[in-house]
Structure formats: structure tokens, C-alpha cells
Amino acid sequence: QKEVEQDPGPLSVPEGAIVSLNCTYSNSAFQYFMWYRQYSRKGPELLMYTYSSGNKEDGRFTAQVDKSSKYISLFIRDSQPSDSATYLCAMGLSGGYQKVTFGTGTKLQVIP
Amino acid sequence: SAVISQKPSRDICQRGTSLTIQCQVDSQVTMMFWYRQQPGQSLTLIATANQGSEATYESGFVIDKFPISRPNLTFSTLTVSNMSPEDSSIYLCSVSGTGGASGYTFGSGTRLTVV
Image 1: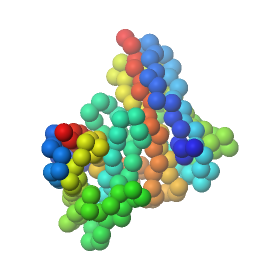
Image 2: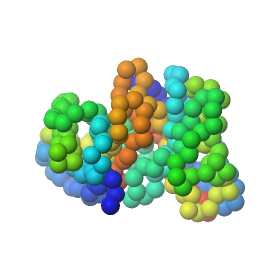
Image 3: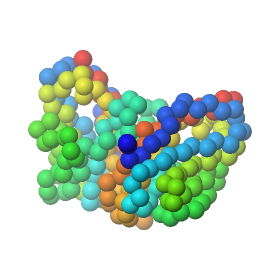
């Protein structure tokens, strides 16, 4: 079993839809959680960083962490064609530098 | 957050040759990280490079195949040696959060094709 599981998609949604992206993990020691967005031929770009259970909102993006279920989500409201990218979840053992474990990424396409 | 310049952005190389990838950061950082991203797979950490010490390699990666240099706090190189088609991948350098930011910043990657 992989430490981090993420549906690779692709996920196609119409413009304006609410998008839900999810990851599950098996290591209960993970303490902080991240979501990255990666456009084609670009490096991953950090979108959200959370260090606790609950929700964190930033504009159209909401990150949700449920440590009891070992489940994290990224919600995108009012999705735009410019949101079309691959979204990677990532998680680490503690603050500061520790090895980060990434999901395989979900490819999202927002159709105008 | 830091800005990372990585080059080359892409290359096509003959098997048996070596390629050196450069990573330049616009601020001083203690640790730099090298990742490999293969199609359909998650980012895999190759090694961690500290300035002034030997790089620390993850399981499955060895110094002879992926030698790393870290001559100062803003620069690192990764060499892919004696390449085979299995080395075709995207290689990314990364630094941990700077200026109070959390998370990790990545370069734009080097897309390597070995023929």
C-alpha cells in the first residue's frame, strides 16, 4: 500500500463548477499537508499549506484535513479554465525540513 | 518565497553519456533537494544537498549515478551519469520555505530524454 493515494484522474468539469480533489494516507505520523499545482512543463507551485485538522481557505481554494480519517481534500470554487493543471497532495512528518511524500497527482481540466 | 532558475529546461541525450543540471536560487538556503518525476508516478526524492557536506541519498539512488555538487548556499548541480532510456524523466530541484514561508519551492524542471 502506498503511503499516499491520489486518484490520477483525469477529472473534467465545466467552468464554474466546484472541484473536489482528494488524497488518503496511511501514516498517522504525518503532521503537515500541502497542495501543489503543476502546469504542463512547469515545476509544482505551492497552493496551500496546513498544519492541523480543519479547513483553511485562500480565495477560491479551501484545504481540508481530517486526521482521524487520514483524508485531505482541496476544493476549488468557481473553477476557471486557468485552473486546468495537475494537482499534487504532499505531506510531511513535522515542521521544518523532513522528507515530504507526494501523491501521484490528479489531472484537472476545466472546460469553458 | 525563493525563485529558482533551473537549466537546461530540456535535453535529448545519447545513452552512455552524462548530463549536468544546474539549479540557482535567488537567496541563500541551507538545504536543496533533487527530485525525479516520472509519468504517472509521484515525485521521488533523489537526494538532499547541504552546503559543505556530502549529499544524502534516498534508497535506490547512489552517488556514482547521481553525483551532486553544492559549492555555495545558492547553487547546486545534479549529474545523471551513464544514462540509459530508463533515466528519461523530469528532474526538479527544490528548496524549503524561505523568508518565513512554509512549504517547498520548485524549479521549472529539466525534461530529459535518453535515446
